[in-house]
Every structure is written in C-alpha cells, then in structure tokens.
Image 1 (cartoon, protein in one colour):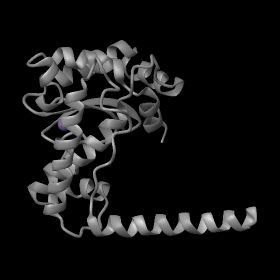
Image 2 (spheres, helix red, strand yellow):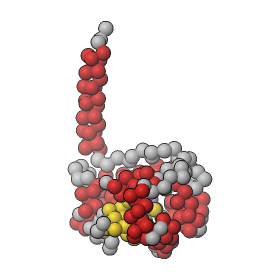
Image 3 (cartoon, protein in one colour):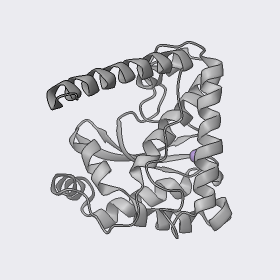
Length: 224
Ligand code: MN3
C-alpha cells in the first residue's frame, strides 16, 4: 500500500502535469469562453434565466469564436490587445472588447445578498460623489443616455472614481477610449442584455441591476 507521503507526492505530480497540459491546450486553441460563475437562474427575478443563457452561451461565445477567427494563433493576452487596439483590425476591437467586457461583467453580478461596498470603496465614493445614491444616479444617467448599444462604466482614473460610457464593445482599457481608466463596475446596455424581460424599458433593467451587483468583487477591483 502507498504511504500517505508517497500518495501526496504522486497527487502533486499529477496536478502539475494537468495544469501544464491545460496551458498547452489553451495556447493551441486560443481564447476560451469562461464558465458563468453561478447558475443561469441565480439572478432571478432581476435578470432572467433565458436572457443569461442566451447572453453567455450565444452572444459571449460568438465574441470568443470570432476573436479566434480574427486572430488565429495569437499569443497576446486580452489586456495587451486592449492597450494596442488602435493597431488591430475592427473585428478584433469588436470581438476582443466583447470577450473582455463580458468576462468582467459576469463577475460583477451575484445573487442578491444585500452586500455593500467595502469601507475603503465607500469612503472613496463619498469623497468623489457625496454618497452611494449619488453615484448610482450618475451611473444610471450614463447607462440610460448611451445611444444604441454600449456600456456604462465606473472606473478609477488618476486616483479618482469616474463614470463614463462607451459605444459598441469598446471599454476604458482601449487606447482609443475617450475616457481611459481601470474599470471596477460596468453595465451592458445592449438590448440583448435585457429585451426579453424588460423590452424597451432600459431604465427598469438598470434599476434592477443594482440588486445583483457583486460588491465584494467590485471592492476587490478597487483595492487591487
Ligand atoms: Mn452583452
């Protein structure tokens, strides 16, 4: 029978080998669709199950597939692509942006837990906006007034919290962005994100979004 220490060494070697193999596979297959970090129905009733299924399994998957078609065999990270997007074809801007934005967005949402921003984030919010309610109303304005498809963002820019919005799948990490900074919160205001449940009532979707913001994740982004 294998001793405990031998068994642990054996298991350790196996883990090392499997992580090495998965790195090799990732390099060969390019960008991959990340799993949703919760069940499709976890955000009900604020964001419905069918919207989440279609949004993740079809829309996000299409951005990943089309990015791989546009950049076969790329060894660049998504962040490297964002920072040099002005020198990339428009298919990389649209699909690379779509992949980065949605990968980020899934983590910004969580089942309604009643959680709040961390003490450090809340202090910064009070400094830059006066209150969390003021921040929400400024963010809602950006999300409501973005014409057509795009995103609203809360970013850290020059040590301050700033709200902005981008068209299409652009984001504030892109070198072409009007307002650049580090995103800590975002909202997808494409119709595909809300139309099944909210139809043309984008404002209702934006209000519902605040019930499922993952403040733990947002606070981590602020602190990192
Ligand atoms: Mn979307």
